[in-house]
Amino acid sequence: MKLYSCLFSVLVFAGVPLNSYSQEAPPASSHMAWSNGRISLSAREVPLPQLLDEIRQATNLSLSVFPGAEEEVISVVLKDAPLEQGLRILLGRYDSIFLYSANDRGGADLKKVWVYRKGQATGLEPASAEAIAGTKALREKLNDPDAVVRRRAFDALLARPGIEERELIISAVLTERDDSLRANMLESAHSSGLQLPPEFWASLAGDPSEQVRLLVLNSLEGTMEAQSVAALALTDPSPHVQSRAKEILDSLPSAHPPAAQ
View 1 (cartoon, rainbow, N blue to C red):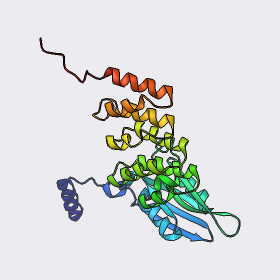
View 2: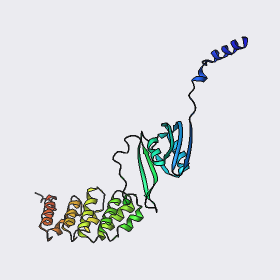
View 3: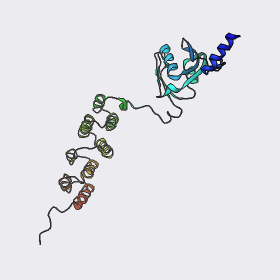
View 4: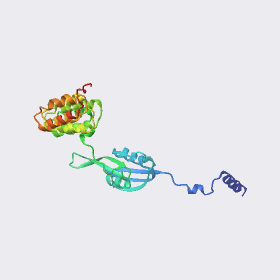
């Protein structure tokens, strides 16, 4: 009786409730079995990244999870489920994207899974080959015989405002053999806001494409080169180019100051 009283006094003095140990939640735990493409999993309050890492190590499947996922805890029980089905159950409250790759057996294997917070993957689309290609690869695509490939490579370079990319953009326009594509390239470069030197635009003043020559005048308006290029354009074979050149020249201040009185 004395021993029980002493123990009671110590617990009260320490501020520990008598039934505290019985109220503690069981520790987080997980157990997984993987065989022949099927997974069995029992997890209780396990952080999502930890659980996905265990699956990755067992299956060699690439799994990518959103930042801050450490705060997400998972409790799940899977019994001998196909991997894809098990992952869909496990990730049921998240957005996810599954990538399948063709195999030699006439089917497709699951290769990678991206996991996002609910709603984050809405509107996501796969990137084009050009968007993820390196600058060196895009340089090679600019010489492709297919005009569509050249255009896609050019658009990908426009999204990269580096010095090397800008030089490739200039070279691509100057060497493009298709008049229509060259004009479209130049219009895209102009509308993108990319800063190209005035001498580049001036070098295109005699381009075979009327659309290009009009873009040159529009792009040079307000620059020092505008007057000389517009003056030459007054004899352009296109009446549209002539008219635009006259508008630019008429808007320029008089070259001769008024005579002193």
